[in-house]
Image (cartoon, rainbow, N blue to C red; front, side):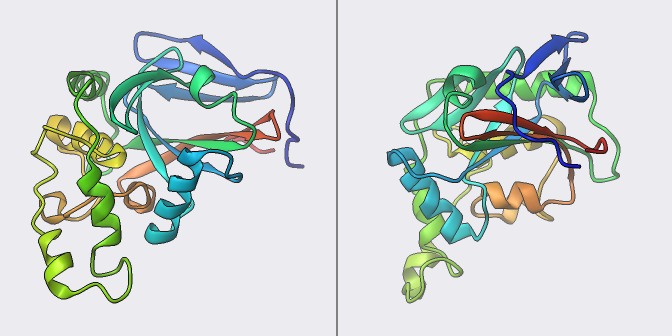
Length: 232
């Protein structure tokens, strides 16, 4: 039987320098680690962030609208609104009424697991981007591309096919920061040819074969539900 949402708060227990146990109650738990990518989705539109999120999900044909790089102790790094910030899951997301956080574990092209040293480099790269501006052009790229808004003149979307987002470290979009943090430090990629990809969306990361789903933490009408690979 599927576990019902509970008002009990999720708990983090440190295991070592890079891994923590995320648990809810006595039976549901998952091991999360630094460098994991978390994808966000939500069900209710109650502020401008959620309005923008609905546009992203519509254009990318996915339920996911935001990507963040997990650090530790609920802390994470993300490109959001105006710049790259460090924030905390408990204060930034868990106070929402309805939101879903899905932890993903990137892996190498040969299917091998990432190491502690690699995840450390990923978080260091993301940390170095703190304070850099948000990439508004990336948002336009979602819309003004060949499979985005219908009827866009070829010359317009062609202009967005020449973006070198992977190595342009002056500004970041959320999923581009997550993708570049892994690719530029460890060579982990989420599409066949990261260099030729003119944008990277949360949908691209979720659909990638180069990641495994670790767990999903849902806030349902203010209560919590933890979904893992363990039997419900």
